Length: 328
Image (cartoon, rainbow, N blue to C red; front, side, top):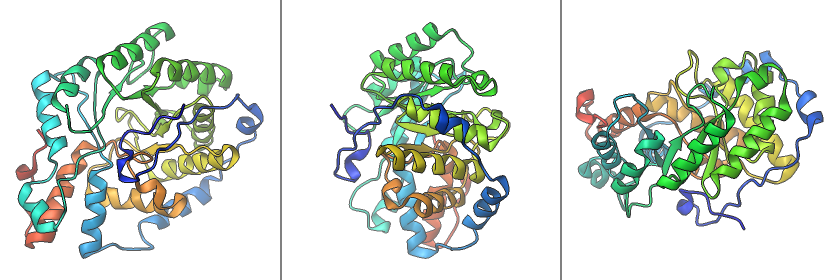
């Protein structure tokens, strides 16, 4: 049975999940990435076109609906999560919503927390339609026995998580043990049940774009609903060359299998300008369908404050102090 993706109401269509396919090592081993071509293409994305005025405002409102509002700190508490969820329900001030002529308050794509904070988030978001996502599998390193990683997934799902962000084994990638990576990811997908699975590649630790491309393919073959760049904890997180490589991988996978896979850049994205750059990548490489929250998300909570600041400037002609748009 096909399950509609969380956040899919904007499109009015139910997107079938990726069922996965048997591991095809020929596709993996024969993959090649032209580094210089990727870097040249990525460098042109932010220079070839400029979005200004009301068109920029419209793009930024759309970006809000694609943000996974996240708190993954050691000092997270139910009260802190509740404040974040309140911001998720109303990411813009009411006067800005009215001034922009929006028919209703936009809401974010999801709220992402640790497994122990899922239940408080579910309570705080009750009736909003905003899904709760949880990291799992020993986030961010993933260096736990597989049975414990699977148990953490099941715990988060039982607590009410509708999306699970798993981390892959980087050691399997370095060793070229694609069968292990496939088997582990497939087991995680099974443990997720009806919850959608985002596979975090931790691209800043994979050494090469070829490894990024091959790991993308293996996790998609194992049934990932989304592929995600980073945990946000690596020295280097989401970059446009890495994003382009992953987007080309999911496009190639879609052409080979007919399955549509989502994409989530995460880590290091802080400004409204970043949102526009990544939207440009998605639109030019994959088309408008990947501008909807069931196929595209930002892992970038701090981006929301700058987006609200830019929208206030559009409405009033003045920039507000950053503290006026605190997240929680």
